[in-house]
Length: 125
Image 1 (cartoon, rainbow, N blue to C red):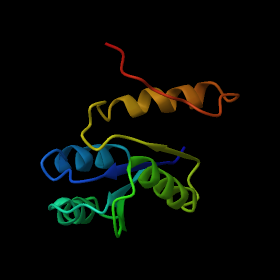
Image 2: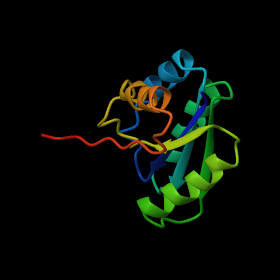
Image 3: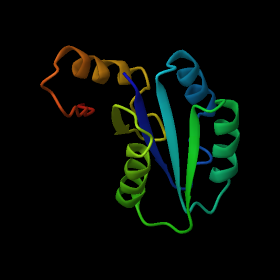
């Protein structure tokens, strides 16, 4: 089961934990990540380039020329993800407010319940 995750980013230089993405991708060879830089004006794009380089082909970057908002970054990223030929696409917040470990839980639902076509997660306080 292959998965491409879209990670929208706007001025996230101080919040992106590149090493966590790298560790996750090494442990999950069936997952690819598309980081969507939404016109960041800080050091986000260079940081994403470093993360993608260290991910050895498991991560790529879609750099948008100007900020269009999170929804537009997700939409453009999802369109790019669907072109990769993966079985599943999803999106995740770049600050990892929801840990990447939760990806396995969501994929588990898709694997064990073939009639399910879409899975959502929500943080509940």
